[in-house]
Image (cartoon, rainbow, N blue to C red; front, side, top):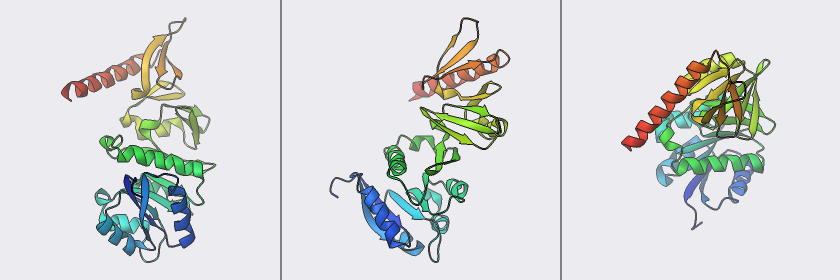
Length: 252
C-alpha cells in the first residue's frame, strides 16, 4: 500500500487466523501487512529484514512461543506488540512482556478498532514519552482488555469489586479498592473519600458545594466529593502535580 505509514507483520501458525487479521487490518489503510509468519523463527527473520512498526504475535506457535520471540530479541528491540491468542490466561504475562494490547480470538471489529487507535497513538509518539507505564487488565464481554493507567479517571469501590472509570467507559475488576490502591498509588492516584480513588492528573479544577464540601471536577466531567478527613492530603497531591507540570513546561 503506497499510502501506508506503518509496516505490520502478522505471526500465527494458522493460515485462517492470519487471513482474518489481514482482513481486519485492511480497514486501516495507514497500516500495511508486509509479511506473514508461521513460527517464531520466521518472526525473528522478518523483524531483522523488514523492520516493521507493529507485530501481531500469536503466543502458541511451533518451536518458539511469542514470549520466546520477545525474550530472544529483548523487549527494547521489539516493535509495538499486539498479542493474539485463543486463551485469556496469558494477559498479565503479556503486559509484563511490554505488549501494547492483548486480543483473544475471535476478535470483533470494534475491539480491533480500539487496538488500532492505540497503535496510532503510540506510533505517533503520544504514548512513547510516557515510557513503559503500568496498566490494569480487565475481562470484558469482548475479551481481555489492557487499560493503561493514564486512561483511567477514577476508580470506585463496588463491594468486592472495583469499578474503573475511563471517560464514558466503565469496567468491573474483581479486586478490592484497597488492594488496587497499593498497586497504583505511586502512579498518581489518591483517595478522595473512602470509596473513590482519583488520578490526580485527571483533576481539571477544585470547587466547593453549598455545604462547603470540596469537589474534584475531572476532565471527563465527573464530580468526585473529597471527604473532609482526606481533603488536606488530596489538595497537597493536586498542588504537587501542578507544580511538577509547570516546571516541566518551563524547562521545555
